[in-house]
Length: 587
Figure 1 (cartoon, rainbow, N blue to C red):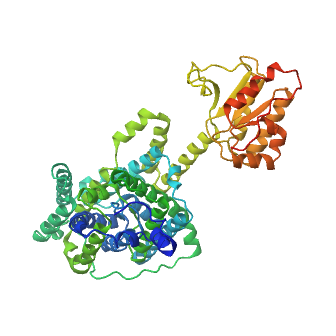
Figure 2: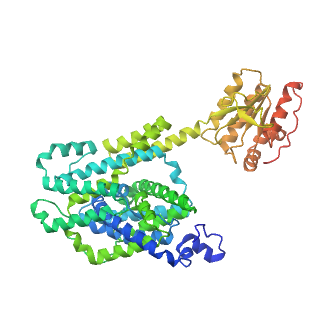
Figure 3: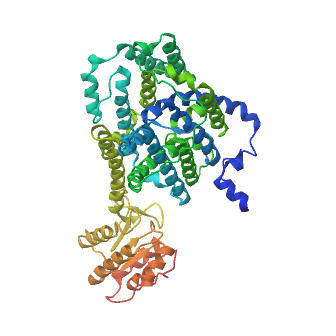
C-alpha cells in the first residue's frame, strides 16, 4: 500500500481519494496483512476499553460514553485519515478540558450535562473540519513546544490529584489543584482503607506490567481482575464504590439543543480544545509517518479529526484526539493499516452490546488507578530538563503554564499558554536580528555575517545589511530604525547602503512605507541606497506603492555581488553623478 497522497488521480476519483482516503487504500488492501492488523486491533481494544471508561469518568460522563466514543472515532478516522498507525480515541487532556467547559455552563442535571458535552464535542469537530477545508493544518506550529509541554505536565498533575479522592474513598474537594490536595490530606482520617488497598494494588500492578511485561495489555488485566475480585468478595458491601449499572445496547443519536449564549461560551473553549487535540494528534501521526516512510496531509488530518469528533459527539461520546501511547501500542503490535482500529471498533461494538453488564462491579478506585497510570507518562521531567538546558527562557514560559494549571484552573491555563505562545512568536518576528555582511574570503561572491564569522572581510565604504527574518508590518519599523542606527553610528565611512531582502517573497504596504522613509533618510544624508534580491511579487508591490521610483529601478539588483559592485563605486564618483545600472530585473 502506498503512503503517497492520491491527489494525482484524475477527475472525480482523485478528489474522492484525496478527501476520503479509504477509497484509495481499501481496494488495494493486501489481505495477507489482516492477521497482523487483527492482532493489533485486539491489542488496542484491550487497552482502549478500560481507558475510555476511565476517561468518561474524568469527563463527568457515564462509563458507556467511553465505549460509544470508539464506535464513532475509530471508524471515521479510518475512513478520512491519512496515518496508518494513529489511534484516535478519547484522551486525558481532552476529557479534562471537556469537563471544565461543560461545568462552566452550570448544567441542570446529568442529562443536560451529557447534552452540553455532546454539543461541545460536535462544535470542536465542526471547527476542525472547517479548519481542514480552509487548509489551516499549519496552525499547531503557532504553539510553542515548551508551553505545550508545560500545559500537559500541569494537566497530568491536575488529573492525578483529582483522582486521589476516588483512590482513598473520600469526597471530592473544591478549588484548584493545591486546594484539592490539601483537602485530601485533611480528610485522610475519613478514608476507606479497603478502597485505598484496591486502588494502590491496581496502580502497582499497572506499573509492574508496563515495566516487566510491556506487550501485555495491563489495563485490561487490571480491569478484569478488579471486576472479578470485586464480584467475588462483594466489595461494594464493604464501602468500596463501584461503577454500577451500565446500559447495554447501541447508543441513541444525540442531537443537542444550544441557546445562542451557550454557543458563544462553547466556541472559545472549543477553539482551545481543537488546538490541543490537533497538535497532540499531528505530532503522533508525524512520528509514525517518518518511521514508516510515508507522507501525511495535515489538512486532511484536520478533516479526519473533525469527522471523528462529530461522530463521537452525536453518539454521546468524548472529545477525541490521536494518542502517542495508544498509537505506539498499535504500531508495536504490528498494525500495517487503519484496518486495526476498525477491528477494535467491531470489538467495542460487541462489548457495549453484550458485555456491558460485566462492568457493574468495577471499583472506582481501579478507574482512578487507570487514569493516574495513563497520565503518569505525561509528566516528562526529562523533556523539561532538556528545554531548560537548550533555552531557559522558553523553559520558564512552560513552567508558567504548568503552574497556571495547578494554581488557577485548566481553561485559564490553556488560554495563558496559547497567549504566551503567540507573544513569543510575535516578539521574535517583530525584533529580527539585522546582520551586517562581509565578503567571504573562501567563496568568491559569497557574503557572511561579520559577527558570526570574524574572518569575513568588511566591504570598504559599503554597509550591507540583511534582516534574518522576512520583513513585514510588525517588524518593518524595527528594521528601518536598526538600519538607520547602523548608518548614523558607523565605525567606518559609509558611501552606500544595500538591503538584502532575499528572505522576502513579497512585501506589504507597511514595509513599503518604512522602506520609503529609509530611502528619504539616506537621501537627506546623500547616501545612495540599493536593494538586492527583490523577488517578483515584492518587486511588483514596490512598483505599485511608488517605492521603486523612489529607490530607482537601476538600484535594484538580482544578486548581492552585483549590488556590492555598484555600491563600491559610489565613493569614487563625483557628488551627484549617476550610479551604475543594476538592471532592475525581477528575481
